[in-house]
Length: 40
Image (tube, rainbow, N blue to C red; front, top):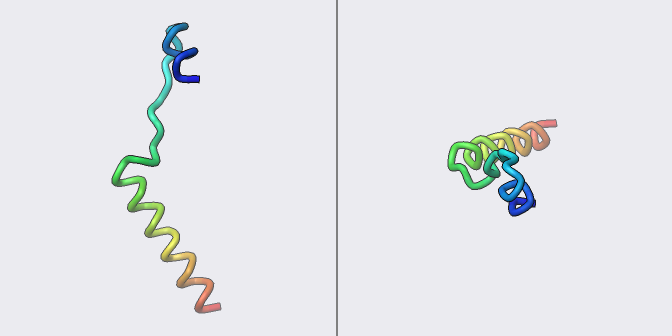
């Protein structure tokens, strides 16, 4: 996919999963969901 896009001049966004802030947000939301589930 990346080669096709690059070879054809199609701009592609980088994956967000490796970005530190995205990972922190994901983990925070996971912790919140676990806490909510445990409280229910």
